[in-house]
Image (tube, rainbow, N blue to C red):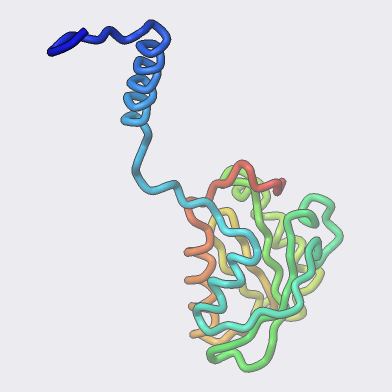
Length: 166
């Protein structure tokens, strides 16, 4: 045919065009907002501390500071110093799966701390679900503020059901 004739699309071509149209329509329903902030893993927590001028050394996974089979898989001990804390202190980071687990197990950390705290008057902790960071004080004021700020940022929304932690 010549001139201004119409060409009909074949059935397979029409199906293909329909599929492309459906695919494009489906894309318009994709959520484009920012993702929900999930808690950081230990390297992410350490980076948050380092951003605030703290020095993290000697991490030991599974060191709860006590013999508690529930806390052990959640715990990482390490030493940290910086700011107005010139001497390194050993601290214990407990990482829980989500806010409900954090709330259920939070009190067990105080009992565990009795194993490693030498002066209960200077025991310190920094908490933001799903994290608890605990250790023997005294801690410098700026040092503790940097720990607190780092934990809050690293905690994100406080829930991470895919974390692998109890």
